[in-house]
Length: 201
Image (tube, rainbow, N blue to C red):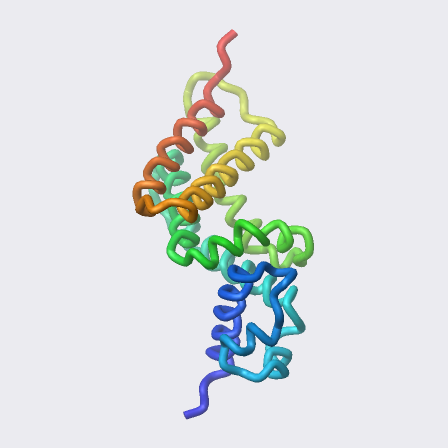
């Protein structure tokens, strides 16, 4: 029975994740991706324009799916909602360690070279997190001023850095993912509360 084209494209993407994780993006060969996917090298170009296009689609799909899931989180407390968002982010990468390795090594390349449309899911996920963070900062009832853009961006960078560090720790240890996740979120929530607390005079 003939497979749907979408199935073949997904197989190529999954194969690329394995090869990028094993060899790194720069050293990865399209022929190796084709071999793992069980297709001819020329067939890759029926679906993708090359390695960079493949990498863009891997992360574009990842962020599109993650941002859609984040948008469904309904916890009324913004701190717990942000906790759940970070947990989802970690879970999606921890569930596929090859994808986590590719994320750690190559996500910067995606951000630097992808189009705005390809980064749409990434931007949506960031905005979902920003909204929860701003709600935490402005809903404390202590008269604290709204955080400025630099403070928002820096706080978000620390949160992403925390997830990256947790993933690196997970990949280099035999500690269960759930234990790493729990500790990461505890530290992240403490950091968020500190970042949104009114400074003492």
